[in-house]
Amino acid sequence: MNKNKIIYGDCIKKMQKIPKNSINLIITDPPYGDNVGYGLNNKKIKNNKNPLMNCLALAEFYRILKKNSSAYIFTNWKHYPFLTEFILRYTKFKIRHLVVWKKHNFGLGWAFRHQYELILVLEKGKPKYHLTNFSDVQNASHINHNCKTHPHEKPVDLITKMILHSSKEGDLILDPFCGTGAVCVACQEMKRNWIGIEIDEKWVEVARERVGCL
Ligand SMILES: C[S@@+](CC[C@H](N)C(=O)[O-])C[C@H]1O[C@@H](n2cnc3c(N)ncnc32)[C@H](O)[C@@H]1O
Image (cartoon, rainbow, N blue to C red; front, side, top):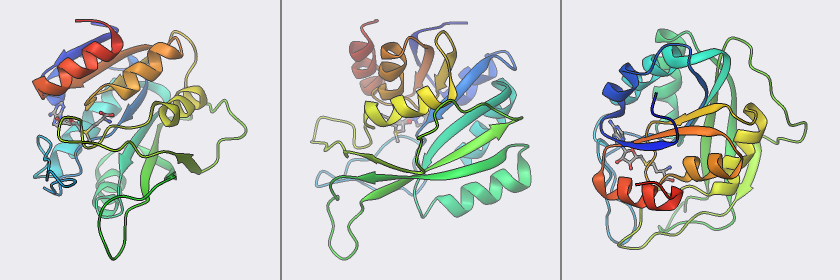
């Protein structure tokens, strides 16, 4: 398996090549399928027109995760009901918890300005959790984007906490929708092995530069 690499391509096809029961942890931030443009530049991300892709991804997640492992999936209040309904009806995952990421600052808008996102914690078997002070409300700054940067870049410090909670040194962590590679950067810092997959060449380049491998 290609460890510690950002793989360019469609994660559904790439994950089909990953052997079953081989990944210790998945942390990922898939497109929510709401076809929304973000920020003043109305930026769009690939494959954001249809939430069904997440269903295909979830089936692969369960297959490739080792027994007694977790998956942390970013979502928002609009996408959450669809996702949980699918997980409960059609996968073998147990939904362990819903974590709120509270941002220090709120985003653009007017009547109800966004200041939180959600993170679903899924379990295959009975995973171990290492921290005793992991709150289900996590505080971390939102990363502002401009016309050149990714509209959904996630803070490395937030991801580091999930890594510490659900893995140990040397484990293999996957982010199949890796964007600019925040999960991969956090894994490098925490001495975990990692695989990032991204379908947009532009973000592959940024992620590879961040982790220092071309
Ligand atoms: C919400 S963003 C993730 C951003 C990331 N968390 C970061 O910190 O930069 C979702 C990413 O999934 C990518 N994507 C969409 N469909 C994909 C697919 N089938 N395979 C791999 N990546 C895909 C998009 O191009 C986008 O960059």
